[in-house]
Image: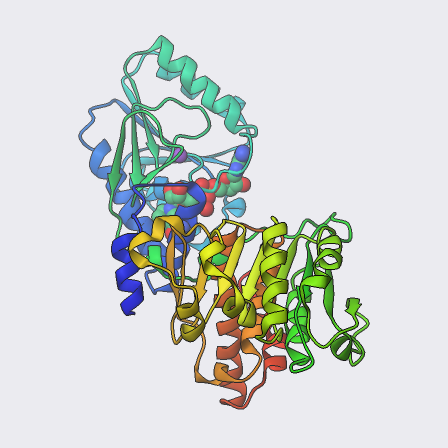
Amino acid sequence: MEIFNILKEKIKEKDVITPKEMAIIDDNAEYLGVQKILLMENAGKAVYDKIKNIEAEEYIFLCGTGNNGGDGFVAARHLGRGIVILIGKESEIKTYEARENFKILKNLAEFGNIKIMEIRGFDDIEDIFESLKEKKAVIVDAMIGTGIKGELREPYRTIVNKIKELKKINKNIFVVSVDVETGNLESDLTITFHKRKTINKGNVIVEKIGIPKEAEYIVGWGDLKALKKRDKNSHKGQNGKVLIIGGSKDFFGAPILAGLAALKVVDLVGILSVNCVIDKLNHPEFIMYKVEDNYLSAQHVDYALNIAKKYDVVVLGSGLSNNNKTKSFVNEFLSKYDKKVIIDADAIKVIDYDNIEFSESYIFTPHKKEFEYMKIDLNNIEKVKSTIVLKGKYDIIFNSNNLKINKTGNAGMTVGGSGDVLAGLIGGLFATNEPFISACCGAFINGYAGDLLLKEKGYYYTALDLIEKIPNVLKLFE
Ligand SMILES: NC(=O)C1=CN([C@@H]2O[C@H](COP(=O)(O)OP(=O)(O)OC[C@H]3O[C@@H](n4cnc5c(N)ncnc54)[C@H](O)[C@@H]3O)[C@@H](O)[C@H]2O)[C@@H](O)CC1
Ligand SMILES: [K+]
């Protein structure tokens, strides 16, 4: 924790975050035990606290089927009056929290102060908009929040345009957006939660809703959910290609473990290694590339570069050995290769750190001892664009702009090969994702696999067991 605390001082906290970052924080607050329904209550109450002071003849809550809509339901309940318009059907409400809050509204609606409508399109509310032309009204935009994906679809697009038209005709319409403005709606006020979002514009206030600061730092299932999803129509190779470069006369199992781990998340894995490794390999899943030597060395760099260009990511280091030959291989390879690389194990030890640039395309996976080789000056962290996974009881994942801590894993993970599994797994994720999230998720999944095994087998599990558990973890948080 000491390094984590130092880094916390050095790495600037973000004041404004992307919707995607916020969605991760929300989910990780839940991972820490803060229930979403509680956050929704606080969010809806924060909206109510602002609208209750706006005098109006009518309050309209336009609610989507996600949690943004849920915030709208809560705000309407606190206000105790108004028309709640669900864009869609009750059965289409996506989450438990929003559904529960909708049910409460239905119970209240029987008393007559709150009116509920489920609509298909703008036609269903045309007469309401007609009547609003003459009224002093508040429109609460709880249509879409941080869950927005792509261009705004119908009927949202039409509804947003109609609100804009209405505002032009009637200056007594006050639009309050919940969390973010839906589409290109120009709201009079946006009440955003926890932190300002990059897509917020206009008059924005930030309200705290009980998300602890720690949710910004912990790696949790929020990170996993934010990984790129496999496209169901994708072709072979589109879900990533990883090349493992490692192995030597001394260690032949390491690159295989890395390769097997990567194979759980990508389409293709190649292994480039020396003859004593490749000749022993009996894995039909791998594409193999052999050099006739005991160790990789500078003379193999051109061959490696030629192969690496067919892949998305190189995982460099597993079982490589630490000697002058591998040193020349690693340094020359890195000086000539500018795509994504996971740098692990012996590769970390042999790098000439006086001549390396910590570029964004590298992810280093050192344990404490290997980290010392890297000679990183924590006071000069802004130069470190590479992502570093400092493995330990708690893994610390950081680069110049980001910092997180992962707490999954247990003492059983000291078993030989678990580091190779992690490097391969991160390599696999990195093929189709950004470096920081790949590193965070790799550490989380690997540790979580270990935690599942601890329950099943105690500490008596192996690196191969870890690999077999990777799909279970991924499936759990799909
Ligand atoms: N996740 C949490 O822990 C919390 C979330 N909160 C609220 O929940 C929001 C995020 O909720 P969700 O993740 O459920 O997502 P949203 O409610 O923001 O949006 C998801 C809905 O919008 C639809 N949608 C997405 N993109 C669309 C497009 N381009 N055109 C048309 N429809 C589109 C989806 O089909 C889905 O029904 C936040 O902005 C915030 O308001 C709050 O309740 C506080 C707690
Ligand atoms: K909104």
